[in-house]
Length: 283
Ligand code: SIN
Image 1 (cartoon, rainbow, N blue to C red):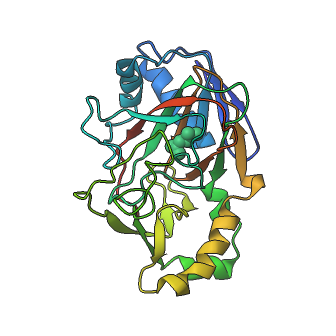
Image 2 (cartoon, rainbow, N blue to C red; image 1 turned 135 degrees about the horizontal axis):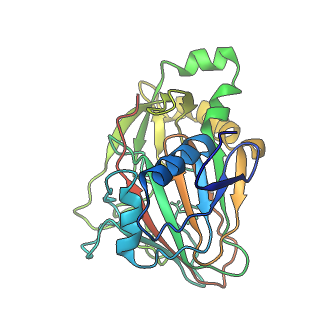
Image 3 (cartoon, helix red, strand yellow; image 1 turned 120 degrees about the vertical axis):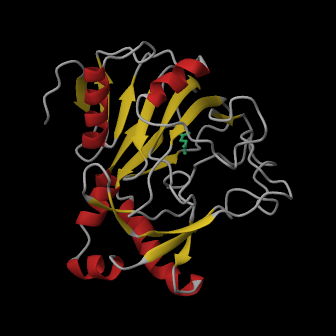
């Protein structure tokens, strides 16, 4: 493992995730600390911080901007002040939760976000954990034959399952998205195998929330292979599970990670504050 001079890095599983200590991310950070945090993110794919105070949205945004420009999510932008900040809230009785299926975030965009930083404002004593899965491993462990098949494929990603007037999520959950008549579908195709722009390693880039079908194939023709890849890419041995406490932070690399928010505590409130960072074209 890489040696760090300033921060403490403790892996959470063999595949993915590390807890970062020895740093207060609500304060101004030196360039050495920022470089070390970025290195830990590239090495571990998702990093966690405990006992931080990012409750002030301006501090949360300042920490985010050390790593890139703030992204505005088209479907969570309901005309509020501060559209860069998204509140993912669950209330007792919600029958749906944002992100409750395996996914990478917002991959219908031409340039999907590079990462997301999620801060726990209020979490239950148990339940509401988040799972993360390493998509480099998902690619590397495929057979040569499967890699050869996938290398030339593109997948069509769109937001038809998570926003728009037909979707009906707002009646099931506290976190609201655009469901108005003026909403328009966002759709873009991306390679199924992408090369990470910083590590230059290949990883799988599909997910069951946004991928609709493979380019040049019907939905029915795509379905079997997609189902195989969804199961394969989220194997327990490629994953870690994070147990939240109030004031915990998760920062994931959206280019090589899938994640899932477990919706298992239906009687508690869970309030999270999230920023996203603008990403690059998928190549
Ligand atoms: C997300 O999918 O971005 C949110 C994950 C969570 O709420 O745990």
